[in-house]
Length: 149
Image (cartoon, rainbow, N blue to C red; front, top):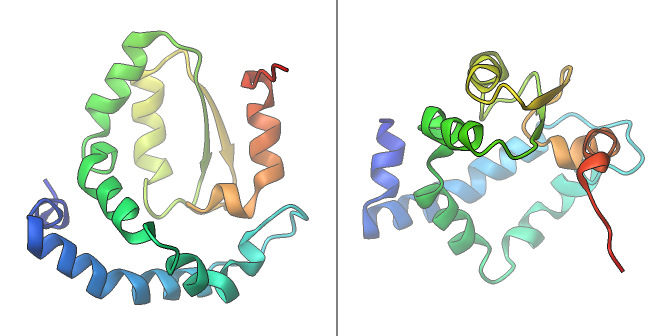
Protein backbone atom coordinates (compact mmCIF):
# COMPACT_ATOMS: atom_id res chain seq x y z
CA UNK A 1 0.00 0.00 0.00
CA UNK A 2 1.20 3.46 -0.93
CA UNK A 3 2.82 5.45 1.93
CA UNK A 4 0.64 8.47 1.09
CA UNK A 5 -2.46 6.35 1.68
CA UNK A 6 -1.10 5.14 5.03
CA UNK A 7 -0.32 8.71 6.07
CA UNK A 8 -3.80 9.90 5.08
CA UNK A 9 -5.25 7.42 7.59
CA UNK A 10 -3.38 8.98 10.52
CA UNK A 11 -5.94 11.25 12.24
CA UNK A 12 -3.91 14.39 12.95
CA UNK A 13 -0.86 13.88 10.72
CA UNK A 14 -2.83 13.13 7.56
CA UNK A 15 -5.13 16.13 7.97
CA UNK A 16 -2.21 18.46 8.71
CA UNK A 17 -0.12 17.30 5.75
CA UNK A 18 -3.11 17.46 3.41
CA UNK A 19 -4.03 21.02 4.41
CA UNK A 20 -0.39 22.09 4.20
CA UNK A 21 0.46 20.59 0.80
CA UNK A 22 -2.73 20.23 -1.19
CA UNK A 23 -3.76 23.85 -1.97
CA UNK A 24 -0.50 24.83 -3.68
CA UNK A 25 0.01 21.48 -5.39
CA UNK A 26 -3.52 21.35 -6.77
CA UNK A 27 -3.36 24.99 -7.83
CA UNK A 28 -0.16 24.30 -9.76
CA UNK A 29 -1.77 21.25 -11.40
CA UNK A 30 -4.80 23.29 -12.45
CA UNK A 31 -2.61 26.04 -13.90
CA UNK A 32 -0.72 23.50 -16.03
CA UNK A 33 -3.90 21.92 -17.43
CA UNK A 34 -4.26 22.46 -21.17
CA UNK A 35 -7.17 24.55 -22.37
CA UNK A 36 -10.08 22.72 -23.99
CA UNK A 37 -11.79 23.40 -27.31
CA UNK A 38 -15.09 22.05 -25.93
CA UNK A 39 -17.41 25.08 -25.61
CA UNK A 40 -19.03 23.55 -22.50
CA UNK A 41 -15.67 23.04 -20.73
CA UNK A 42 -15.24 24.59 -17.31
CA UNK A 43 -11.53 23.78 -17.25
CA UNK A 44 -10.73 26.98 -19.15
CA UNK A 45 -11.81 29.14 -16.20
CA UNK A 46 -10.84 26.72 -13.44
CA UNK A 47 -7.29 28.03 -13.01
CA UNK A 48 -8.41 31.62 -12.46
CA UNK A 49 -11.11 30.53 -10.00
CA UNK A 50 -9.26 27.67 -8.28
CA UNK A 51 -8.65 29.30 -4.91
CA UNK A 52 -12.21 30.69 -4.81
CA UNK A 53 -13.54 27.13 -5.18
CA UNK A 54 -11.06 25.80 -2.66
CA UNK A 55 -12.20 28.37 -0.08
CA UNK A 56 -15.77 27.08 -0.05
CA UNK A 57 -16.57 25.87 3.45
CA UNK A 58 -16.32 22.09 3.63
CA UNK A 59 -14.27 21.67 0.45
CA UNK A 60 -11.05 20.41 2.05
CA UNK A 61 -12.73 18.20 4.66
CA UNK A 62 -14.83 16.55 1.94
CA UNK A 63 -11.84 16.04 -0.34
CA UNK A 64 -9.71 14.71 2.50
CA UNK A 65 -12.49 12.30 3.57
CA UNK A 66 -12.61 11.03 0.00
CA UNK A 67 -8.87 10.35 0.00
CA UNK A 68 -9.12 8.57 3.34
CA UNK A 69 -12.09 6.38 2.54
CA UNK A 70 -12.21 5.81 -1.21
CA UNK A 71 -9.61 3.11 -1.72
CA UNK A 72 -10.09 2.86 -5.47
CA UNK A 73 -6.81 4.74 -5.84
CA UNK A 74 -4.97 1.93 -4.08
CA UNK A 75 -6.99 -1.22 -4.62
CA UNK A 76 -8.81 -1.20 -7.94
CA UNK A 77 -8.89 -5.00 -8.02
CA UNK A 78 -11.42 -5.18 -5.18
CA UNK A 79 -13.41 -2.23 -6.50
CA UNK A 80 -13.63 -3.57 -10.06
CA UNK A 81 -14.36 -7.06 -8.76
CA UNK A 82 -17.44 -5.82 -6.88
CA UNK A 83 -18.70 -3.94 -9.92
CA UNK A 84 -18.08 -6.98 -12.12
CA UNK A 85 -20.04 -9.26 -9.79
CA UNK A 86 -22.96 -6.85 -9.70
CA UNK A 87 -23.76 -7.13 -13.43
CA UNK A 88 -25.10 -3.58 -13.27
CA UNK A 89 -24.76 -1.82 -16.65
CA UNK A 90 -21.56 0.18 -16.57
CA UNK A 91 -19.96 2.74 -18.87
CA UNK A 92 -16.52 4.08 -18.03
CA UNK A 93 -15.27 7.24 -19.75
CA UNK A 94 -11.51 7.42 -19.29
CA UNK A 95 -8.85 9.79 -20.55
CA UNK A 96 -5.84 8.01 -22.04
CA UNK A 97 -3.50 10.51 -20.34
CA UNK A 98 -5.10 10.24 -16.88
CA UNK A 99 -2.32 10.99 -14.41
CA UNK A 100 -4.31 9.86 -11.34
CA UNK A 101 -5.74 6.51 -12.43
CA UNK A 102 -3.50 5.29 -15.24
CA UNK A 103 -5.46 4.30 -18.34
CA UNK A 104 -2.74 1.89 -19.49
CA UNK A 105 -2.83 -0.07 -16.23
CA UNK A 106 -6.46 0.33 -15.28
CA UNK A 107 -8.28 -0.23 -18.56
CA UNK A 108 -6.98 -3.78 -18.93
CA UNK A 109 -7.95 -4.58 -15.35
CA UNK A 110 -11.38 -3.06 -15.92
CA UNK A 111 -11.95 -5.13 -19.08
CA UNK A 112 -10.84 -8.28 -17.28
CA UNK A 113 -12.86 -7.78 -14.11
CA UNK A 114 -15.92 -6.01 -15.51
CA UNK A 115 -16.35 -7.67 -18.90
CA UNK A 116 -19.83 -6.22 -19.37
CA UNK A 117 -18.54 -2.63 -19.01
CA UNK A 118 -18.45 -0.33 -22.00
CA UNK A 119 -15.14 1.53 -22.05
CA UNK A 120 -14.98 4.88 -23.84
CA UNK A 121 -11.39 6.12 -24.17
CA UNK A 122 -10.82 9.80 -24.89
CA UNK A 123 -7.42 10.22 -26.52
CA UNK A 124 -5.05 12.67 -24.89
CA UNK A 125 -7.42 13.59 -22.08
CA UNK A 126 -6.22 13.78 -18.47
CA UNK A 127 -8.03 13.08 -15.18
CA UNK A 128 -10.06 16.30 -15.44
CA UNK A 129 -12.27 14.66 -18.06
CA UNK A 130 -15.59 16.08 -16.83
CA UNK A 131 -14.26 19.63 -16.78
CA UNK A 132 -12.22 19.49 -19.99
CA UNK A 133 -14.45 17.33 -22.23
CA UNK A 134 -18.01 17.48 -20.84
CA UNK A 135 -19.64 17.15 -24.26
CA UNK A 136 -17.82 13.88 -24.99
CA UNK A 137 -18.68 12.59 -21.50
CA UNK A 138 -22.34 13.41 -22.02
CA UNK A 139 -22.38 11.67 -25.41
CA UNK A 140 -20.90 8.54 -23.83
CA UNK A 141 -23.24 8.53 -20.85
CA UNK A 142 -26.53 9.91 -22.14
CA UNK A 143 -27.97 6.47 -22.90
CA UNK A 144 -27.64 5.59 -19.21
CA UNK A 145 -29.42 8.66 -17.91
CA UNK A 146 -33.16 8.48 -17.38
CA UNK A 147 -34.98 11.74 -16.78
CA UNK A 148 -38.31 11.45 -15.02
CA UNK A 149 -40.72 14.27 -14.46
